[in-house]
Length: 295
Ligand code: NDP
Image 1: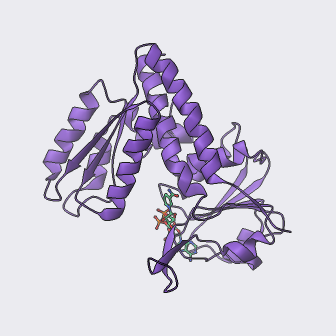
Image 2: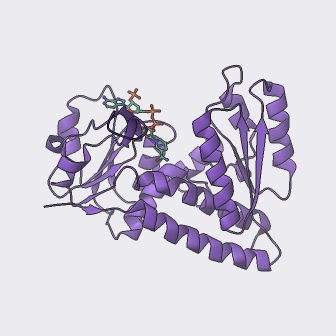
């Protein structure tokens, strides 16, 4: 068997087209959804990511602002930016790109963001709303993207045993929250594993749907996957490869080729979950604009 590809590139572009259509409708009713991204310092990976968010926003017909602040910005100055964006009616959603310089307390910044504009869905208010099944909650982009990939590929989550490896606040935990809800793309039986889980291979083999988000290159081997399982690889890891033009290549947390032989569906890396994140951020910004404008 060779697993079918869960094609993040194609699914993300379909979602972006849907968002652009809905944005056009809102714009014609007088509301242009606006997203702002704040970046502090000049981390090269974050700069690339922030530039892609801005470009995607404009392509979707949204208003986009990027606020670039020097690495020397104080916590008070960043809090003042957050306050300004909280009050800006042109901005329906915004996020502060992580990681922040060490002298800034990320938690204090996050808590200052108006939950109604928290399109990353990391504010405890949104985490709580998601957990109680409130549909106005913003769903964190990466796990939301995974759920959309499953839904749009016709993969049934209802009654399935979903095993998630990784319990971070940005991927593993919200993934569990989404899959367990009584909604389409939910109703799964969920197991969350982490570095202290006993006999991880046995737990992984129990999965109908295996979601892996640990940040360890090719950690999940063929022996850890039940034949016929759906495998979603969230990991993005750089590994040294002298044969590659850049001297490295990107791999996921799953050993793709051998696992594909037993899986029914599998996400490639790159071209899988990573492609979904920005599309879901746009969807959240559209949701924010609708919720704030009542349209
Ligand atoms: P974190 O480092 O925050 O969390 C990793 C989790 O994996 C932790 O819960 C940790 O357990 C668990 N873990 C680590 N090693 C093992 C192990 N050997 N066995 C079992 N569990 C283990 O990572 P993130 O969730 O932020 O990211 C995970 C991966 O996903 C990374 O490769 C990241 O680059 C990628 N990513 C991709 C995104 C995208 O596609 N857009 C977005 C976000 C992340 P414990 O808690 O016990 O330490």
